[in-house]
Length: 547
Image 1 (cartoon, rainbow, N blue to C red):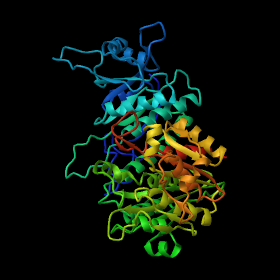
Image 2 (image 1 turned 135 degrees about the horizontal axis):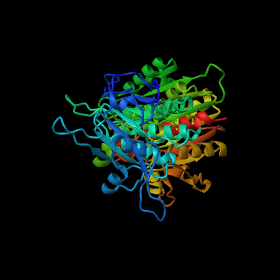
Image 3 (image 1 turned 90 degrees about the vertical axis):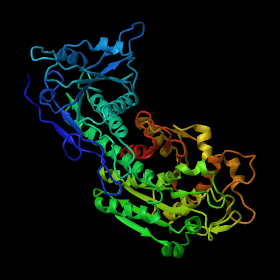
Image 4 (image 1 turned 90 degrees about the horizontal axis):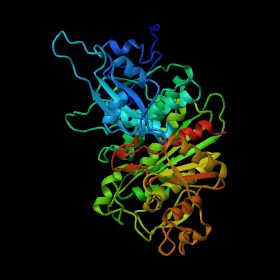
């Protein structure tokens, strides 16, 4: 047996099985479960005999073309030998195909009588067979997610999933990152506000046979990215009777303060003095007054480029006087997901020590119905003086974004402006629920974001800014109309982007319409029901590679 290798722990230390969802009293700012790197393998790890591990997870891949036998991967034959069990035969009997996202738990029997000694005596009594598909990053994220869901409620799981047959960097590091990211993302559950909860905590994950510095760095990066996604989900899933603009602003202030970042909050008085006519109009019908929040990260080594991320922050959307159907209102607590993404991105950029200055701008308002509600036909004067004719009060997101983008352009001097918003149902009609609609005025920025989307699995599709559709935002009584009245043009996501483009000046600009992937009706792989957190990992990946 080889000497014991000290375990390398990532994240905050805590006892195995302790809940990962303690966080603050509000349920925001929770941390994913702990991941431990362990140099010993499934052959010689003492962890498998000390009683601290509840399950061992091993990997299987699909049969080769022309063959009908599942392919074992690193750790699976070794586990079979140590347990004295034909794991390949078990996998076949269970009907596994090796596809990414499959997981089957084998519950090993315990002996009856002291004279019976089974081959697996003293070893964890659960073996989880996990499909890894083609072992691409997407497949390994799905494998990690399946492992998380199949082991929820256990204390600690030791896994060979994603282990390579050779310790080649970056292959081993990339594989570990994908598995860990999938595991941490799928470990998330929506905070419960019930008086009691039987939610099962996610298990601590031990990666066997992996403790190289490059792997540790990759796992730490996965944890930063997953933590950002958890924050977006927590914020967006918080009920709107708790979460109003003031609450969001205070959460941003606290989280930024804890990270040592610069924070500025504009309240109703400052917004009125500054001429933020869009934010004020959208928030006028609610008893909860609007806010504008700025959070800034500046690296000590030099500012690099300055990227400003603006996120739509409608903490609840009734549609205003253009009121939504009841069913359409149910998920509207997540209509501030863009603001949550912007906040999580700047916090993660600081944690990852991104070499660029990053600023998040959060325009926050509640679109309600009240005596002071703005109306279709009103003309608003937005920040900087542009006048806008209102055609539909349920298209409020582009109004608050326009104010924030114009303010960022005029006062923050960004090199790149990016906005993120659950903006249009039209984007979901064209692209479904898995792709965001991506628009941009700078080819390099668009290319970089698309590459980041592919790497992270937060997919986006480059959409055109069709100049012929500009007539949709023309008005006879104001500088712009924010929603087309003539339905013959169509392209609702495109016309929304064309409207926003008017407020970014000459800046390099990209717009992510996340109305589709920002919410999910059910758990699937690393995506969780409700707010998905889409966008935080994509933007963080892009920022870390930005020249």
